[in-house]
Length: 84
Image (cartoon, rainbow, N blue to C red; front, top):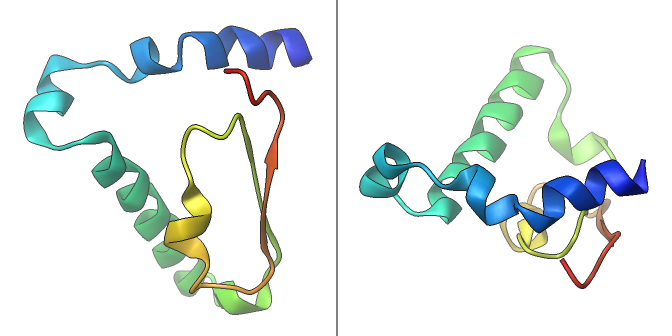
């Protein structure tokens, strides 16, 4: 599994690269939008985000904690590969 994670982490920027997307907004916009969609889904399911424990697993490239710390005190991150 580590090898698969590394294969995506190494080409993270290339996987996100899209001329249409880049012309519309920066990468942070899309990360925040994904979080908005997730929160909307949880609210529709009757699951208050503040009652949940969150784990963000990655390589430290996107600091979702800064966006989500106001949602739940139980938000934690795990950096699997700091070098990526």
